[in-house]
Length: 326
Image (tube, rainbow, N blue to C red):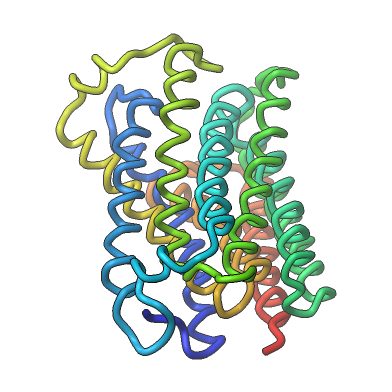
């Protein structure tokens, strides 16, 4: 099994996890008239596929740790359940976040959902695995939260029209954030308790848990969407081949981010890896600026907020990186 040998390697992996987590949504932008609930089936298959590829390659061959299948046989059952449950919970949060963006917009959904997730996920992970300097970690999280708010302010300044923020939309985003922060302790326990799981085993079980939740939550949202009209599987079969390919590719990209983050967490600790990985909104904003030209013609205020967001995010990553204590 491959594990990073130095903190610098683990740190680079967490940065790449943020890049992947902040980039997968570009694949959805490339689809045409393809509802997200249908896109998500292609996406989740990609997530499972890349997790299995990692498990049977880097997770089964290398100088350290147990190979994937042996680790599944010897790991404590409670750890297997925790890894699966973490994926199940996260996937519900991800679906709610997308629904929240439809209801109240990116500028409200991201600060509410990701802000709650960062605070909760880092705090609970640190309680279970107190690894790293708490002051640096807390300071980095505070800077990351400030960057998320600045990102929201930039999008608000870009879009002159302000939609009415519904109480339903806020409630959806709050629940998304609570659930998104709640999955991190499950991963922490599976990595640190009893006969532990390797990061590769956790990634596979996590992705299978996410797949299982689709058969409950995504099917429900297809029939009772929080935004838009109901859809059925006939739309999935009518979609273009390129749309299916893009959905699968989006899952591959997100799965790469998850694998990198969990493997790095095995060295640096879940709190540090999770906190840096959740700087993904900065990456998404970069795509919006340079690839999708979302800020073309934006006023000075939007550009100021955007510039400050990048400064705060970079400072947050540096401070969280300094929190590591080997």
